[in-house]
Length: 279
Image (cartoon, rainbow, N blue to C red; front, side, top):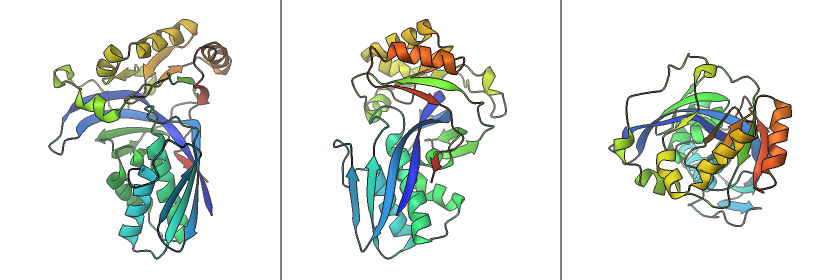
C-alpha cells in the first residue's frame, strides 16, 4: 500500500482570458499549495477500481476524479491489475481548493510508484491533463503559474513561508455554473505580471468573483471580515466559495483564526507548502 498526502491549493491570482473552442475557458493563474490535505491510500488489487472515503458525499464511480485518474493510468500504461483507493477527506468538497484534483494527482503518483511503471514527472503531467484541469498543478505543487485551462504548469520561485486562514461558508458553488455564467464582457486587458516578477508585487485577484459575489454576497462579506480582523489581503480561491486571508505572521494568523472560527466552523489555519504531494 502507498499512502500519499495530497495538499489543497489556492489561487493567488486568477484571470479569465477568454473561451476556447473546446468549451473550456482560457485562464492565467498563480496557484499555491497549502498545508490542508487529504490522505490518499492506494492498494493493488486483482482487477477493477474501488473508491472508499470518509466523506459520504463524494461519488464512488467514474464521476470521481480519483477514479478517472486510476482509469487513465491503467489504460495508458497497460498494467495488469486493479486498485483500491481510500480517501480520508480534510479538504472541503466543491470549495475552490482542488480537493478532487489533489486526490487524483495522489492516485497517479501512488500507482506509478506501486506498480513500478517508471513514468517520469513529465509523463504523469501528460496523464494529469487528461484527468482534470488542476491535476497537473497538484502533481507539481508549490508556487506555479498555470495557463491554458490550468493544465500548463510553470514552476515559480516558491512563496516565502506564509500563514493563511481559509474560510469555507456553509454552501458550495458549482465550478461549471461559475464558468457558464462568466460573461466575457468582464475580460479586460491582460493584467497578470510576468512569471519572474516577485510575488510581493502581485495583488490578490480573482476574475470569477464577478460571477460568484453577486449571487453569494457572503463571499464578499467574509473577505471584509478577514481584513478587518487583521489579514493583509483576502481573496476567493478558484470558483469559490472558500475565501483565504493572507496574514502578516503566524501570531497574527492564529489571532484571526480564533475569531473567524467562532462564526465559520469550516475555517482552517494553514501555511504555504512547496510541494503538491508527499509520501
